[in-house]
Image 1 (cartoon, rainbow, N blue to C red):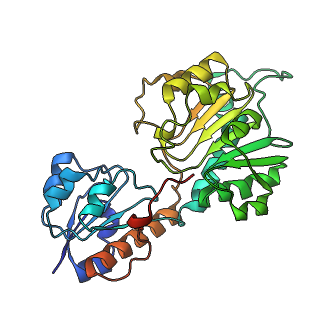
Image 2: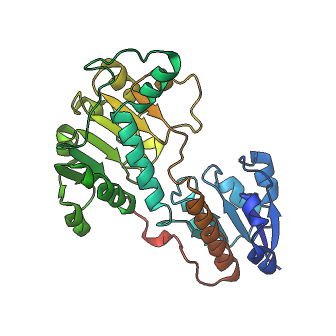
Length: 327
């Protein structure tokens, strides 16, 4: 019988398909497995089910050995996988796209509104006694009505975000990427160069993939082109943003505010400079954190794993041969 090493153990223990088709070895905690335990646990495995927090590199692949047929990741992102090594060894990869699109889009819009309307600041004022008499401009923020929104990466999640923003009365929706997207007509999206998007947008939402081209994309030069009233939101990957440059832009007033659901590293240290700023809202990477979404992700990850182990079709297999940068 094939063996599988799985990391989100609390779900796997309830899934009857796993033990029917393979011998299962579990890391019995929601916390990431320590490196030593990961290297020990994958030895001889035919399949690995991992999380975004598990770095699957050449060392892990070597530890697993030649039996390894498939890696199933409980995520839509795959930058934690050493894809060149995986491809070279002929290992299949499963991931969980589409199923978290709506949840991530909802969270992104919530984060944008919370940041733009200064909701965390308001909650803090209520709790610390700062709420006194009504004042004309106290805790004023920026609204979406009549605004220009820029989406960097109009893929599945970018489109879902755009659909949810349009009913707020957005006047223009700009987007950038490698190519124009036919589906952008649904939201009257305008395909523009990145510089145009940066300089003309009142809100900028980053929802692109992390690639060599997008790593560090949002840096000092990027923020210097933004309006000083603009709000920046990132729910894609933390490494797309140079956080030191973002801190400088926020603390100097170069931009109005920022909302982040992703950071580098994760978790962000509690003494990080960004956490000292009132105009920076940081969430603990909870874009897909709804009960129904996580259950669906887990079920898909299991089906991917079993398909890979059995040498059959995987519901969501990453096409390693056609990977290229995307935004």
